[in-house]
Structure formats: C-alpha cells, structure tokens
Amino acid sequence: MRICHIGLNHKTAPVELRERLAVAQADIAGILQEQIRHPAIREAALLSTCNRVEMTVVTHEPESAIAAVHEWFANTAGMELDEVCEHLYSYTTDDAIRHLFAVASGLDSLVLGEPQILGQVKSSYEHALAARTAGHVLHRLYQSTFAAAKRARSETEIGKQAVNISSCAVELAKHIFGNLAGKTVLLIGAGEMAELAARHLHGNGCTDILVANRTLERARSLAIEFGGHALTLDQLDNYLDRADIILSSTGASTFVLLPDAIARAAGKRKGSPIFLVDIAVPRDIDPRIADIDDVYLYDIDDLQQVVQGNVEHRQEQAEAARALLEQEALSFLGWLKSLESVPLIRSIQQQMEARRIEEIDKAQRYLKDLTPEQMELFERFSRSIMKRFMHPALQTLKSLPDDIEGDLLMGAASRLFDLKDSKVTDITRAKEKNEQSPG
Figure (spheres, one colour):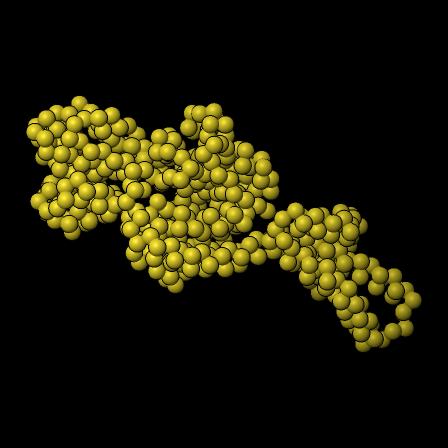
C-alpha cells in the first residue's frame, strides 16, 4: 500500500496557473469519485486553496496513480502535460506523509505558521468522507495529520508570531499611505479572509469599512460588527471612488473589478491613490488595473515580500516543529507498513497451523494409546516448536522497511511459505468451519 501526494503551490507555480486549477467546493466530490474509478487509485482527497492544489491518493501502483493525477492537472488547467508537470511535485509514502504533516502545521505556507491551513486540510478530509473516497488508510492518515499539527502548535511557538495574508495586506497598505487612520476600506467578499482583513484594518485605525458581497445578508452581518456599511456587488461602481483600500476575496470565477471602473474611480479621486489587494484564486481583479495611474495593485504572490518579519524566530520554531512531526510521521509509517504485513503474517500463521494439524493427524495414527492429557502435551509441544521456528521470520515481517527491500522480503516470504497452496487453504477453512460449528 502506498500513499502518493501530487500537487503544486505558491513556491512552484504562479498565480496564473493556480487560478486555472482552483476547484469550487461543490465540484470536489465529483472530481474525487472520478479519480477512484481509475484502477490504480483506491482512495483520494483533494486540497484546493489560494496557495495550493494537491491531491492525496492511496494506491498499490504509485507510478500509474501519479500519472493519472498528472493527467487530471493537465486537463483541468487546459495545458499540455509537460507544461503542467514542470510545476508539479509528486511525493510517495514517507515524503507524502511528511509533506502533508508540514502543510497542516503551516510549515509549507506562504506565511510560516499561519493557522487557517489546518482548517482547510480538515475541510479536504470532510469532502473526501462525503464523497466516500476516503477509506481506512486516509482516515488514519488524516487523524494522524491533525494530531501532528496540534502537537506542532501546542508544543512549539510556530503559530505564536505568525502573520496571515490579511495582516500582510495591512503592512503593504502602510507602505503606501503611512498612517491608516481615517482611511476608507472596501472589502469585496464577506468570508473568513475578509473578516480577518477587517479586524486588522480596523485595529490600525480604519473606521469607515464598506462590505460588498453577493448576498447582502452576509455583508450586513460583517459590516455591523465593525460599524460599517453593506453593499451588493451590483452597487460597487457607485462606491469605488470612496475607497482608499480595496481588498477582494470572493469565490467568483471571473473578474469582479475591471479597468474601466477603476479608471473612473481614480479620475474622481484626483491623484489620491487607491490600494488594491487581490487575495482570491482565481483572481478577482483584472491585472491590467495595475497600469492605471495612482493605482497600486497587489495579488497573493506579491504578499511574499512582506512575510519576512520575525523570520529568524519562526524558523527556529519551525525546526522544533519538524522534529515533532518526524516522530508522528514515523509512528504513522509503522502503522502503514503493518497494514501491508499483517495479512501476510496472518496467512503464514494460518498456513503453518494447517501444516501442524496435518502432521498431528498423521502422527495420531501411531499414537493411539496416548491419554487425553498426553495428547494435550503433544499439542502444546507442536505449537511451541512451531512458534519458536516462526518467530524470527514473523518479527522481520512486522518491521519491514518501506522500500524495495521490504517489497522483496514480502514477495520472498509469500513464495517460501507457498501461500498459494490450495490444500493448505482447504485445511485452514475446514478447521475454521469446525471451530464455528455448535457442539
């Protein structure tokens, strides 16, 4: 059994490619169910955020499974396979587990230690459960992932000084305006990222906050919390010239803000700058807007330039967190390897027991005069010598390395113990049937 993790993120792919691959939450179940129809893929989960798109699969055929997922990435992006593969990473088992643990702990994030990613990983697992594409292995993997992330956050300070995307946006705004007190903010979208941005901006003196959203009810809920004003997206053009800072984070599949609208707003402001931050993937703001005078546009990739604060301390904590994650990864790997060897060990034990019974039956023809007590001693002796003989082999199988050597040892054990022997299977089944019979 192998776990494969295939994907791309803010380190390997530009936002233009990531937005092509962004998956709507409602589409995830269908994508996962399509993946497990492939003969090489047993289980599957998909993580899609503004900074990464990654698929985790369980398979007995890693190469075939990875190739199938690569095809999905290429088809979804509408690109040639070779073009997409330049941006993809593919991890198998050990590396796949370590990568997922690091992602959930915020160690692989744009902002080191950011806490939102754990919730997004949990959501990806819940989608797999709902789609019925998460089985025994993924269930155990994600439970181990959540436990590992919890340890990393509770036993180190990895998240203590972490900054999130919204706070990075505030830092950029300070570079443009200096003091943010009295600045008017327009939030487009009323989700978690917009709420975080509102808190940071309000805390830095922005008291005039406008919230525009597809549903007015959600916009009102967020606006009321900060003493702001709610709008629908249809009303945006009437308020753009009032906004000093515009932060957009919708789930729209097309641009929400176009150059003509921002050009008109900038003209009305007579040289007063407009600062726009687009933290949506796919992007909400047409990138051509950056060419308009007195308009400063940043997308999510630009925010990497302001995440270096407290970097030395957070890197020290990251190393401590990685040490904890390694302990959790080794524990999970041990369980995963046992998952492969347990059926083999059970088959060997059943095969040996069947052989023992066969030899006892032969011996009884010549030991008819033994008393029941003597026969019990004979049985105990036969079991004891069998266990002693089998112990080294079974212990080796319980601690197999997760590499080609482990596979070779399992294959050798299967052949050495002749596990395809139908006579052995018949004897074992007969024994089990007799034990289950009443009386």
